[in-house]
Image 1 (cartoon, helix red, strand yellow):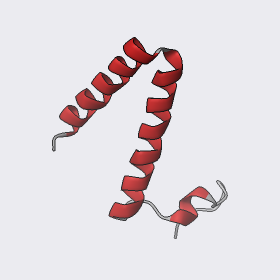
Image 2 (cartoon, one colour):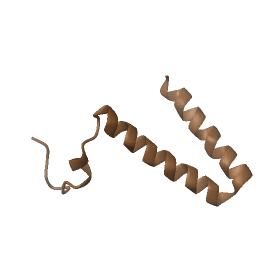
Image 3 (tube, rainbow, N blue to C red):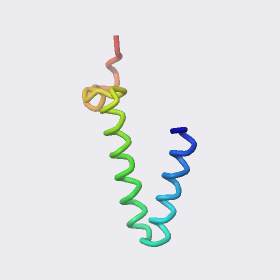
Image 4 (cartoon, one colour):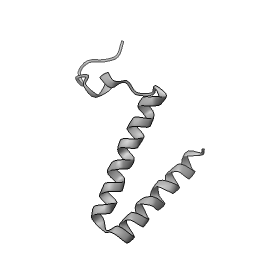
Length: 61
C-alpha cells in the first residue's frame, strides 16, 4: 500500500477519534498507532530490540 494512503487513513482515524471521542480518544489512538508502527517495523526486521537500549554515543559498526 502506498505510504500516502496509509498516512491518509491514519489521519482520518485520528480525526474521527478526536471528533467523536474528544482529545483523550485522540491521544489514545495516536499512542496505539505509534505502538503498532514500532511493532510492525520490529516484525519486518527494520528495527532491533537493541536499538532502544543502545547508548547514543555508541555507533553501529
